Image 1 (cartoon, rainbow, N blue to C red):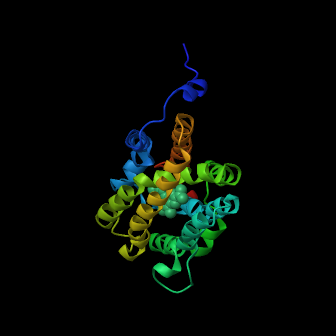
Image 2 (image 1 turned 180 degrees about the vertical axis):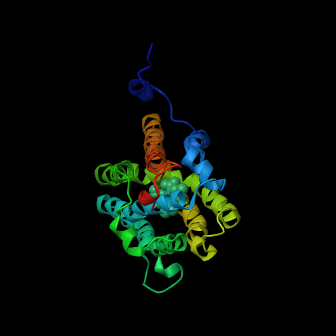
Amino acid sequence: MTIDTSSEADTLAPWSREEFDAKLRAKESRYHIHHPFNLRLNAGELQPFQVRGWVANRFYYQACIPVKDAAILSNCPDREVRREWIARILDHDGRGSHEGAEAGGIEAWLKLGQACGLRVQDLWSHKHVAPGVRFACNAYVNFAREAPWQEAAISSLTELFAPRIHADRLAGWPSHYPWIDAQGLGYFRQRIPLATRDVDHGLRIAHEWCSTRRRQMRALEILQFKLDVLWAMLDAIERAYPDDLPEQERP
Ligand SMILES: O=C(O)c1cc(C(=O)O)c2c(n1)C(=O)C(=O)c1cc(C(=O)O)[nH]c1-2
């Protein structure tokens, strides 16, 4: 028998904040930190072209994030929320073209790409981007364009689990991949406090919006959608860069 959760949701009291948060956090088991490709990446098992392939494909995600955040802003009539949310765009696009954190996350990712041996123009051309990665990232941006801004804000809550994945890279990559200039890992370092701040804001929005069981259940569905975006990206990247990819097709 299937349970009709949609009508059931209307008869049930909302979970307490603690229960709701626990259910959001339990989604960690589906985070891409557990994807086979990420396990190999962070265990130092990948060949240089596979790391480069991951970096080049992930750059498409990086480029989409501020567009996604601008879509959320464009749907949000609340000035207080907009004032806080706009920081996310500047975090990635930068507040100036100079060096350091002010240059923003996209610039830092380009540095990571260069440290891995990729050329800036090749990253911007997105020529290495696998179709599945493009589809997944575009689905995320389109969701933010079309959903109520509170739902789109909730979709960023995969960042609950991001500090750990960044910290894993900082801890492991210098010894696993000594051919990558460690200066290039700054992106991961700068994201840890920013992800924590984003999550604080995202959770405040989720707590206010999810005042009914139906909305709480919807939030869990949305978080799963976003987990699927990240998982599908790694599925596509894994498929694009098999261990025996011919030399001439390697990034
Ligand atoms: O490297 C990662 O595994 C990872 C994951 C995520 C995430 O969980 O969505 C983000 C990031 N990095 C990231 O760097 C980032 O700026 C970011 C923004 C967002 C978002 O949904 O708004 N997610 C993420």
